[in-house]
Length: 366
Image (cartoon, rainbow, N blue to C red; front, side, top):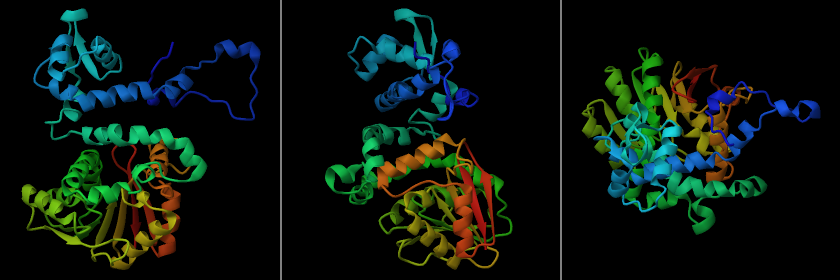
């Protein structure tokens, strides 16, 4: 039997190293459950991704539905609709009253909040992208490891993901708002835990929809923020700023952060920016931030910082493999890695501030 268990429940399980030998007299006490749970993990993953794609959790938001009502609402013709629904119940993603055809299904508190497309806390955008793009591209992980080449659109069409996005402003805005769903918790945690009281200005590099600048302005009325990104992104950020009602303290600036000087500010932030690039460009961005900061200023990189022992932050390590899939030579990094790069650029002190989930703020002080 394959038992799908939470990765959290696997942390305490012991694993054998290459130097250990197996005592065949005790093999009956060994459990292959973790191996099978990970190896067949694409089953529950694709079940969730398909449910999000179908809009199942949004359909269940107003009221519980029976299996037949779900099938009619979502135009599902397979007789295994009940296996989908009951599978999601078993995975802890739906709740059910009753059993059989008369049973009714409803969202859990978590799926109601995070997977209803009408919820302000919706994070399904990243899951929709994972379903539409990454799920297929990750089938090329073996080739990526062998060749070091990306496995995304550029492999199939000759154009990178960003080339295609920037060519279609509507699709670009949809993508950026999808990314905002997973960034909100980290940005809010940064705004609430880092001491911004001693600073007056912030420049968010690669600011996209200006989400971080808006959050900082809302929580810290003394701050003036600039969201810096490519010219094609600027109108998207301006619409977000106007909608949030913070235009008097949040502005936009446009340019190429790999080629142009960064706008000067007391604090420079980069939310999920550094991991998109190879080591040379990581160092370039850190140096550019140092040059734009005054003495006493701070560079804050929000990333899924890998623990220095490289044993615990599974999401950070998997994200690094995802950067291989997307860009070939990009990667995520540890706090020690960041510390070395920042000290080489001239920063005097580096600290790691945990945020939400696997993410942290890597803070370097000038």
